[in-house]
Image (cartoon, rainbow, N blue to C red; front, side):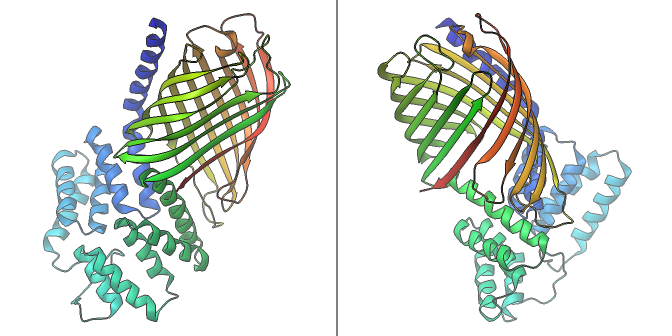
Amino acid sequence: MKLMLKYLTIGIFLICILTNSVKSQNYADSGYYYQKIGFKEKAAGFFEGFLYSNPDNYQVRLDLAYLYQSLNLTSKAREQFEYVNTHSTNERDIQVSKDAIAVIDNVSTPTNTNNQTTTNYNAGSSNLDSGYYYLNKGNKKKAARFFEMYLVENPKDVKIHMQLAYTYYDLKDYSRAITKFDYVAKHSTDPEEVEKARSSTFVIREELTFDTKRSLDVYFYNYYDSYQENYIANLVSHVNFKLAKSTYAGLYLDLYTDTKSTKTVVYNDRFIELGVFLRYHFLKNLFLEFRLGYAHQVDQDTSRINIKPLLVYFNRLGEAKIYVSSSKSSKISLYMDMYYAAMYDYKYKNSFLQVALQQVLRFHTGGYSYIENYLVETAQFDSRKLDYNNYFEVGTGVRFHPNISIFPTIFVEPTYKAYFYGEKKNSFQVKAGFFFIFRTKL
């Protein structure tokens, strides 16, 4: 029990350090990403989170101020410009802020989201003008109604479909937002619009799986290990029911197996487990899950009730583009993925700490397709000090994803593995296989 607490404490400590060190920068990166694909209110929220920990980053504060202006939140924009004007020591920042404040104080006519000055808008003008008028007034429901009326007579106006998509997203009407983005993706002749629409659709569908009342997630990772001459597979799936904000419960399946382990020579703990779970998200990427299930241990040839609490943190630093359609668009993405997990598994009466890092260079080959070259570092520890559960592994790899949004990713990964305990020999191996991650609402 002391060792279990020790490993869980180490895991929590590492996660806390990592959260404090990367969260604020990740807020800024996410803000710029969502601003780029047109989700302005979501971008503003991330900028606000970043400035909470970094109040004197005047560039981000100016970007937030301009973002507020584009959302017609004049008072909030002025507040940010005023802060820069009174706190920054950079002459350029001060002058920019003063000019912006002067414009805000002197402008009496509203501006639309395309930075075009509007004059004498009223509800009796055309449907399109009325739509922008109410959008500027902050009445997005009424704006959407006028935009829809405009599209009845102008059904092929792709730009208004795009404006409606963002308006519906702001109204949290995600199904209509997806419909409008899909229309833009299929009918626009502007590669940049197509790229934004397909990326936005992918992001919204991902968000829906976290916000919906019922959802399904599937993780399937399997590969052939050349050194062990062993095929290894891991499948984890949840049926999620949202109980309250950040709280989920449901059913789970956890399967881990290989083709070479025996009762006398164990390469991996093989088991199949079914049960119920309760999960609480402290953050979207930091959660505590408690599992209660019935497990069959293959190598021990036993079945029993199992209890497994686990604390998981994962994050991505940098931007991995989702869809690239334009020859003028950047074809390269650079990012780092990280994963930390601390858990106790009653069926093995064992505590585990897992760490995985990947530094990835993605080359986009068109649409959703890409080739990635990456470095990988993983480590695992357990409280029983079993040789196959305590190791450090480092390597590189290449993986390919075809031009289908939901499809397995194929990889080849040469690595070197060093064991901390026991008599297992350090080894060099090549792993080849595929993984599949899928989430959908039910």
